[in-house]
Image (cartoon, rainbow, N blue to C red; front, top):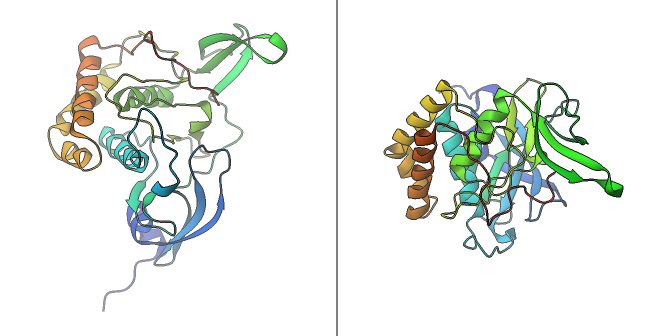
Length: 268
């Protein structure tokens, strides 16, 4: 008889897809039902986020009951880039019905990558995004670090057409990695990019970044495309491919467009 795997040998996706989920609480700041729990399989136990489809709030610009599928699709695209931006994510049944289950990320609270500072006083190595008025009418600037990990997240958000990249969705860890979470409002066929990571707007892409985009475009013609078509509408997959091609043709970060708010509200 084969020996059971040790807890550390249980892969993340197997743990999330096959483990038993115990719900411990709810993240009350989330607009949709977002539950914190423990998932256990073959002796390995980790914290997880569980978003049941039944708890999704209807949106005027996204079909009902599709946000969990979009979260899983975002993970699939992230994996294809090799940048590991989105934490391991699966679609499965849970205590409150089918939904998205994602590995919980412990955040290093000592690291700041997105911030609001007094007007035009961003720290060295940071990029300005937006001038505004803060509490009491004080002039402030929304800024973020000029960081390769955030560049990659910004590129991924463009591909995904992420309509809600808040500062609070950027999760630095004590290992030095940076994850991005909350991808339920991605992949719309209309341009809806809304993000706090506009610091590179209009700037040229690096050669490594265009190489990744080219590989990603090719993957959409193969297995990745097949995976996405099981999660998204065919038109949404086609538009994803078109966004990649548009970035490759311009070889630059996008710039905000008229007719759609460029920054999510609230930004954190």
